Length: 204
Image (tube, rainbow, N blue to C red; front, side):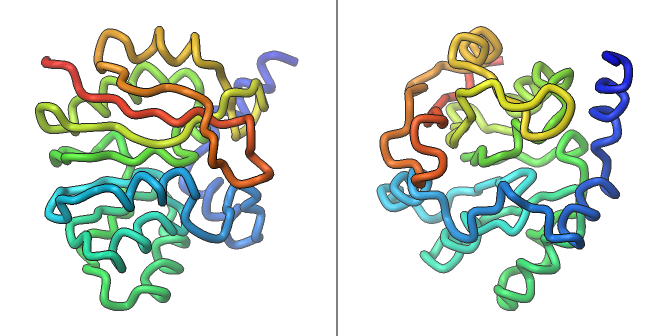
């Protein structure tokens, strides 16, 4: 039984996610910008910063940032389907900032990376690699900001959950954790189940 669960996890490839979008099986999609992230975005002053949103899906956060004057927002997703959806909603968004690539193949540098239901969509065996890749992609003093689930959730399919202790141990060697606490302004269905994180890249 355990072997079957692991095999299902391994198959989280481009086709898996494309099928989810094409069959409207996107329960993680809240239909708009997440309220904790909106609050964070609204206090950002420097709109020239380069921002990455990996595993962005329909990318409502990117849309909100773009429409509020942040011109250097990069949207990454393994599936082309949500990027097409985003481009239809935002026809003036630069096409070269919509990246249909594997997050782990990126080699650019960013000032800010936004985490929103990407970590929980990855095979848990990739979590250490996620952390080191985030550090690699950020400029010195760059920030990783977003939301992570603080509940167990699934073991055989996304979303995969976790807890604060696990996350702190995972990030401690690579990031200075400025904030990791229960979000007080989550959307109602996720209230009490999310941690707001704000981390700064440690020196390599």
